[in-house]
Amino acid sequence: MTTTSSSLRRRSLLAALAVGPAAGAALATAPSAAASGGGPGLAVRGADLSFLLQSEAAGARYRDRGGRPRPVEHLLRAHGANWVRLRVWVDPPAGYSDVASTVELARRAKRAGMRVLIDFHYSDFWADPAHQRTPAAWAGQDLATLARTVRAHTCETLRAIAAGGGRVDMVQVGNEVTAGMLWPLGQVYRPGQPDDWAGFTTLLKAGIAGVRDVHRRREDVPVMVHVDRGGDDGGSRWFYDHVLAEGVDLDVIGLSYYPFWHGSLDDLQANLDDLATRYGKDLVLVETAYPWTLENGDDLENLIARIGQLPDADRFPPTPQGQAAYFEALREVLLAVPDRRCLGFFAWEPAWLPGVGWEPGAGNPNDNLTMFDHDGRALPSLAAFRPAR
Image 1: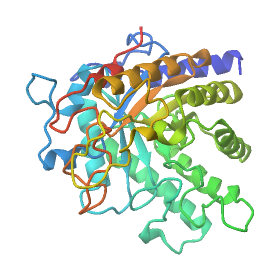
Image 2: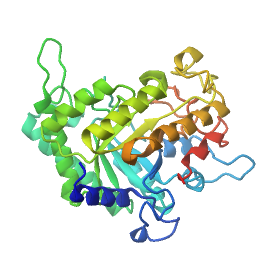
Image 3: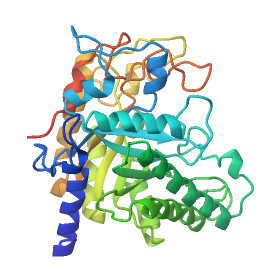
């Protein structure tokens, strides 16, 4: 849309998404996106740090090459990162992304001068397109009751984070909800049955209502709806056409893009360009990563272990320099989206070093997708967090 009201709303949203002030300064005086030096292009340059407390407890230490160990959020901030993304599970295994750890990490992000995106999974553990399990404590509820539970959980969690000193700046309602969430009531696709968008979007709207119970002004806390279709324009359109037709009032389109699963950078560019013009909404690449090696850092085989898994391996070999080149090319793709509709990106778990498993007792299948080597030394790809000029 090109009306004056939509233009004003977009400027307000960009201001809300801008980088916060330097560590120790009052967040209430945060500058606009333009004043921060990034402008509308790459106003969001973030990292998912949900495993950070566990990694530190396991002995991980982070440093620039040749430097002394520093908290990773301060290292990222020094390289230009301005957002932290944190997932929340309902009743996870001990130490895994519960509300208390999220409050602590959100508070640390704020102290480092960074903004916070909260990623509600609405599950006791991992939620993705193939796994959207209803929390055990919520099992057996009918749709109306489950919707009320989702709204209350969202509201209570956001209030707890604010009370702990980590007030949020954006909320993601559901994680990679391509096939719905809170199965079976919120499951879109079932074998031999018609697609069920009504159940899913009832729960999605309940989560959004929970956000608005705490943060009424969308300019202050935009709501994101996130799918895993970064390189799939047809799949992205199919999803957002249905969700918007059901009246879901979202502010930001969130996409995962991992080139080894979601296609080439050309595929990503085509999708972002189409979504930006089709829906007139801002976009954020909310998960991305690339290998800096094919070597394994622990006893669990890595998900990305062969060069044949990389669609652009000739341009971006799995080396520290190749990883940095990937992120540089990614920045150019995002900056080229029409009307600067793509606000930026989050690197997924760039500090998840060997020593913490994806589940208790397991290893780390992503230890070659970090932006620090296995000893915690910064890799050249951290330059990707610098503001656009």
